[in-house]
Structures are given as C-alpha cells and as structure tokens.
Image (cartoon, rainbow, N blue to C red; front, side):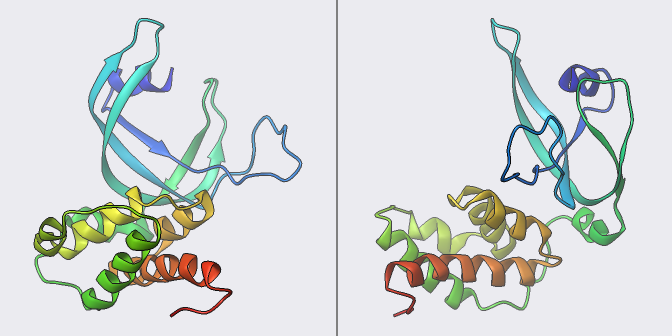
Length: 178
C-alpha cells in the first residue's frame, strides 16, 4: 500500500529502522530517531503482488512525531532541518577526513573477513561516495548502521565507519587493535 501511494504521488517514501525490542512481539515497535527519505527510481511488480524497488536517497530526517493515519503502514512528521545539508549533493571539495586511516582500517577489515575489493576503484572513488557506499554495504548490525545514519556530517560518518571497522578487529584480538 505504501509503494502504491508513493507511485501515485511524488514517488517519495521514508525508511526508518525500528528499535529492536528485547521482549519481541510488539505490533508497533518504537522507531529510531532518524530515518531517510528516498525517491522510487525503479520498480518491478512480482507475480505474487510484491514490489522490488530501487530508492535514490534524498535526505535524512529526524522523527518529530509519529502521525495517525488510516493506512496499513506507519507515518511520521519529519524534521528536515538537522540534515538539510544532505540536499547539497556530493561535496565538490574533499572533506577534512583522514582517507589513509579509513583505507587502512578497510584493508585490515577486508583481509580479516576474506573479502576482495577492486583497490583501483577504491582509490579513484570520491571520498563522500566511498564513505556512503561502505556505510551502506558493509555487513554491520542494525545498531551500527543506525549510528552511521545518525552521524551529522560526512566527517562524523567517516569517524564512525573507521571505528566500526577497527572495533571488529579489536573483538577478534582479545580487545587489542594491532
């Protein structure tokens, strides 16, 4: 129903990670404080009536409040102000982050987990695209992914990402990063 409503309108939907509940069984678990709005840029309907959709990220938002609507999906009033800079698109200037430290943490993470990567592509990637792609594609937990979503700036997200890559290493080495 949500995808049908979006396709009938501006093709925008918001995605918010529910906060997992220890007790489980909640019909409407609490929502994370920050979500992301995206525009449906491609979709395919399956034979069983489901949709396969591709979203293009537009802007993150803080949840001002959950709204009441007669829909089978949940809706919120978004507060865009904290993340208005998301609308600027990819930065022209390289942000003030330590690319070498990020790549070092990534290299060690990939080696430990026996993942391969095209290092030429990594080296050529704009820093913002690299940080955002790694944040989305690395197999972090939902709590770790939420920390990446909530990082205010690209510099903050890079710091969180580097920390997450190194934390996994610390756990494997008895708490010590080599």
